[in-house]
Image (cartoon, rainbow, N blue to C red):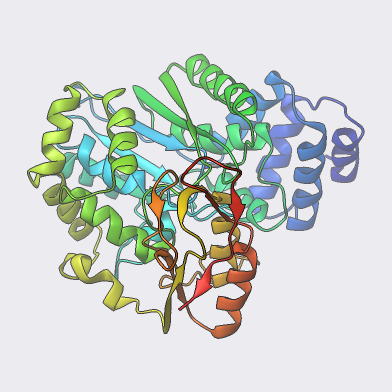
Length: 425
Ligand code: URA
């Protein structure tokens, strides 16, 4: 195929054929089509979009770039969830072991940080030794033993998404409906699932700013799932403030550990149970009991050990990754917290080094935010609004400059909200 013409066709708003999309994805995956052409093509898709048929062709081509997990007969139903991405979204770390407390199998394939959102793989890899690169054979052996596995795209499973995902992360081409659908569904279809729940987020910290755009994305994701024979459902959830009280890789593992031990923040627990119950065979009350009685926690410890992670440090993960600078930021007014902008926290996390600016960058596991207060809470002048965990003073200052517009405190009596500048103490 003549790749420049293929890119130009999309740039000029024309639909691409299944044959050309398949050849392009195959060439990109094997390395004969370079990153610069794939980046240009992704940007053309971002601006021009894709028809439902093209989206289906792209999903299928990405799925076929690798193997699909195969299971012996008479094994339990396979279930999973996938989020379209948010700030502080550590649901997968809690939900995967929780669902596996039942007899279900959870063969979760996740991604790294994408754009301003954190990634499950980066969070898991803050656990020393944790191996997210299992072969399909190792994946099956672990499912037989534990009922849950958490891995990433690899040379064998979804290699096209592995490459394209990393490229989109650093080329401004993430928030394209067609690219998101193909990325998510190629991974989920490779898992060969019976049931899938999708957490489709909208708001300042999501790739879809409005509920209407999230609904359109959900419909496109569900359509591909249904066409490929997976029982697929979704929830549309807001992402205007960070989920839970923390954002950052090790910081989110610490919050997931607390949640698995029955002490998680209410919004994280509620969302996890909402999503889990829609693919589980047991009632919500049983799922909640497993979170509170240590069953889900023990499953997570077993999962970490099975994937060569050091489970002994899980409860002290922040001392494995100490941030040299930890500072409190306090309210400059009293009132009701009206806004803690998730998009600003996401961009600030990237400035701190929790995500990537170039494909080869290493993420910093130690940095991010903790003790983030929730919208709707009453705060007093001088109260801590969040703690920043930074590696360098320059990164701290850049993050704080981004967060300058993130916080609003409304007068308790109900007047107009005042922008407040977080004050360092
Ligand atoms: N999650 C993915 O796996 N891919 C996307 O494109 C967005 C969220």
